[in-house]
Image 1 (tube, rainbow, N blue to C red):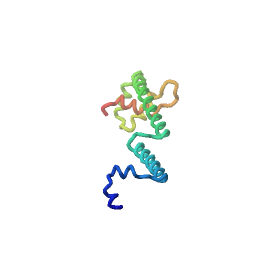
Image 2: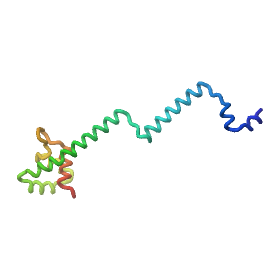
Image 3: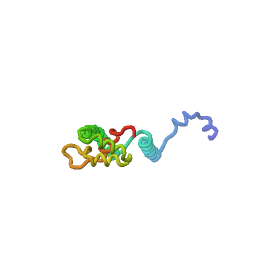
Image 4: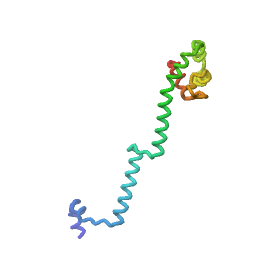
Length: 130
């Protein structure tokens, strides 16, 4: 009987196979787990909270990108612009955003306090080569 089984082709043995319900259940569970692992690792799937966090960061970045040019315009309207830009250039790279905030350039109309991220982007626009 073992000799007869060895002579059967792979296709024939496959068609004669009768998997049990337990085997089918665990095969389905394994397939689902493997699909999730591949999907989250390489497929680009994310959870809802990750998607929301990413959307929040992108929204904040877009707002800063739109407000930074307003900050530059406000700096251009400052009567002492030349002296303040010279002083800004003398500041260290790390201090420039704070300096822009202190000048009031990063304080948007209707706001009480300057936005630190807008000040940082504004300083980068005012001193692009430094």
